[in-house]
Image 1 (cartoon, one colour):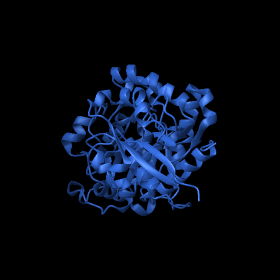
Image 2 (tube, rainbow, N blue to C red; image 1 turned 120 degrees about the vertical axis):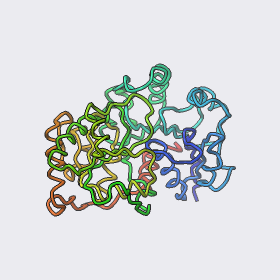
Image 3 (spheres, rainbow, N blue to C red; image 1 turned 60 degrees about the horizontal axis):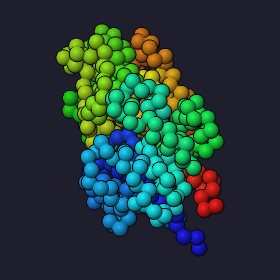
Image 4 (cartoon, helix red, strand yellow; image 1 turned 180 degrees about the horizontal axis):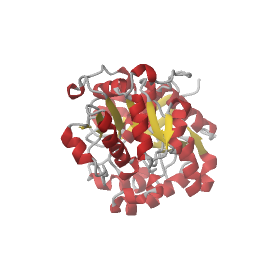
Length: 369
């Protein structure tokens, strides 16, 4: 019998709670799915604060590699330049889940490519991150033996920046969070009896929230009780909400929810008249997949990743067409029977599928040869 692959998943960015969106959610969901596999012996790289939480995934502290207690801003440098010596030859696979791989590590290296925004849209990131991370990110892309891209759109952007890397890249789409799908819906009292549209994501400029708020200002002229709900994490950088945002907030036609639990998010998806995804650039567009998996009508921009995720199950509009977005919302605010979400034609993708495709990509790139 072939022994399981000793797989180190780099999770140093996961907080003590184990909870956040984006790459944190990806890392935790993938960890659970890899741990369920008989052909993988999963180990996790963790910060001291999160070591106990992550040990619960892998069944004990002996499967956790602890980072030293250092300031958070120095962790990427530690992971890139000093980690390989600590790891030695203990692992068959070392898998970076957030931009970086240890330089010189003695293992089959895997890097998940969530997007190329650090290179495509550097203005969206703080100057220190631009200065300190872009070079190591590109070096890690070149180093990785297997690159796991979350969408074909992201693989295309990878190929534009690193043409030689494309041959080592596999597309492994994401899945709706298990926690979200299994959460008990938690109603939002402020929305009781009111029709609402939903935007999920942060307020960074690439999310294009100003177009939706401008469209909503036109919607409320015909539907004074309609609410735009914006669910997102705390602001982490530059934010843009548009000139209509303050008035909508003051009138009660806009509700911002920050740091909501999965139950609340599920309820919002399941009760929204429409979910709006107007982003200018995405690596995958998980809110679009979540909306469709939970049965919500969806409108997205023409961003390639969003179109890839949603296909013909969503309406697609130009990102700057304010009146087009307003018209789409008004159609969905009509009686539900006129705007039902299309039925799912394919089985729901799960995180076990994501793990299986990831392992398949690594083995296909010569693990063990």
